[in-house]
Length: 390
Ligand code: PHE
Image (cartoon, rainbow, N blue to C red; front, side, top):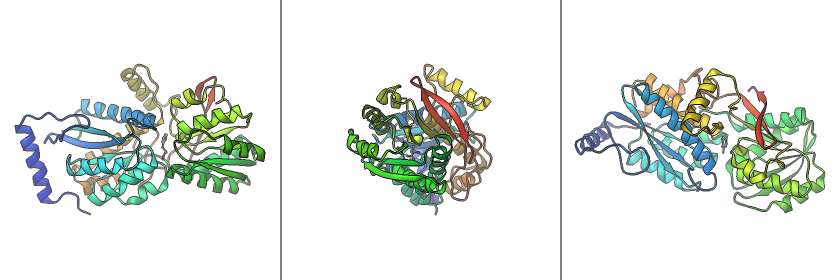
């Protein structure tokens, strides 16, 4: 698939010349079209507001930091990188519209996004069709990169995450009978529930009951009461932090003391605010990154991030947002070009590239294989528990 016809390149160059003559300064987010000959424009669609604002905010802070560091070091191919960020308000349908605009109006070289798999699934086919590479920092549903050969991710996928949660339940929690409470409105949740179920069966476990909810629900007492009646020894909640937080709080209110656990969707400081530290004792989730790692690359990232954000500790979304920019910039450098097909080929050849979430190699499915960490909550604080290798 061709992304830039000679004619289109001419139009881009012409627009750049006009913008330059008119003295337009590129804007760094949203706003008007900003095409400049000496910048490489990258579009980022993110949930900066709305239900999963914690995801978009963190991911953006990470990508922004990487862009700043790269620009300070001289940019890429002698040009500065420019990040155009647009908010999809955590809503379905918005990401497709934003990405169409990025491609036709802003002439982005590549697209970054999203955290939530459902929204990456919307935008992937649009990038694929236009021949513009898309790099998802942290969408883990396998279908995301199945959109085609222009769609990549820099994180592990849910077949791995579901299996590691199953093994964690069997070996560390030592439970045999588990109930699942999953979100029917989320591609991520449906997928992860599935991979957990398969993985748990494979280690001799039994899913005694599966209950459902729909993202945005606030009352989970009916499902939890049904689960309590089964005597399940643990509850798997493959969902996002808003609902997971409420589920944990309501489970404890109903006198359910067994462990609850989930995947990376739990990760957000809001989880603790919503559920409360006490309810979160004996809960666990898997994710991509721990700021407690002694890796010098991680510590340099944590330090730079904290310096920029008043001491705030970066989470997995921030780390992967940062890594998505590094991987993309490295591919543009190796391609020696910003043309879609060349950048795509260079991305596909990414091998052992050092990231804060570990060495990144993109496989034939354009996915990364990386270790996961398991986090628990102790006295109202996230605490690293263990690392799981792929
Ligand atoms: N992996 C989740 C998804 O695909 C998103 C997520 C990533 C959430 C990292 C938190 C941390 O929807």
